[in-house]
Every structure is written in structure tokens, then in C-alpha cells.
Length: 166
Image 1 (tube, rainbow, N blue to C red):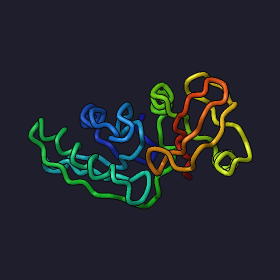
Image 2 (cartoon, one colour; image 1 turned 90 degrees about the vertical axis):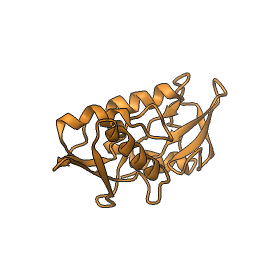
Image 3 (tube, rainbow, N blue to C red; image 1 turned 120 degrees about the horizontal axis):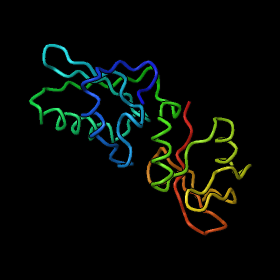
């Protein structure tokens, strides 16, 4: 699925699907919704990329990986970071959310529910292993800035929760 508002030439989609997020390798850049534009102009692929967080270190890697993917077919790539509008977890495709859960990362909740769970006021994060909501926040910061660390009190497994951003 391509994020609403994204401008992507259809013939570029197979190459974009090959480029994964280095922090969540089961997600393509299309699943994550960070591609705002990917068009070919005079043989050059022009990509506009929106980071999940300002200063996200994965963006440099993604830019390099895009160049590698299109270099295979002899195309030059120009990557531009676009900060506005800011990326939102709403841009993650449903397929991406399902892949994330299968990988062991809990999907983002709504904005208000996210604040409640991150402040310890609610237990709404679903454990991706056993599907229990009997979970607790361990740390507001998980393996990356966009994730928090949770633990399931039923299966006792720790897991990342992808924070909601709007």
C-alpha cells in the first residue's frame, strides 16, 4: 500500500519494496510509509523521504539502500529528506502493521491511548507473542527512539511497542 498523498511511479514500486527499514527489517520503506515521492525524471530516480523521527539514523542507511537498489538497473538516485508534513504512524500500511506484530513488535495505539500507556495509566498494549493486554511498561525507550520496552505479565516475554506519532 502506498501512503495517501505519496507520488510514486508504478514501475518503481518493485524496487522500493526491496528496500527495508534497517531497524525493522521485515518492513519495506513502502510498508513504513516514509516514501513521499519516487519519480523518474530524465533517467534519474528522485525520492523524497520523510523520517519517522527528526534525526533518525536509519534515514542515511535507507538513502544508501535506495541507491543500491536502483543502481542494479543502472539508475542514479537523488534522495531528499522532507520534514513537513511530519511522518505519522498512520502512514504505516496495514500489511506493515501485521508484519511488525509477527516480528514481535506491538503496533501503535491511538494518540490518547499511547499517552496513557506510556505514563503507566493503562494496560492496553497487546503482547505480540500471546495477545494478552496484561502488559506493563518497562522503559519509555526501547531498542530505538520510536519504540518503548514492555513486558507481558502472562507469558513473561519482553517486547517493543512502536510509539504512536501523529
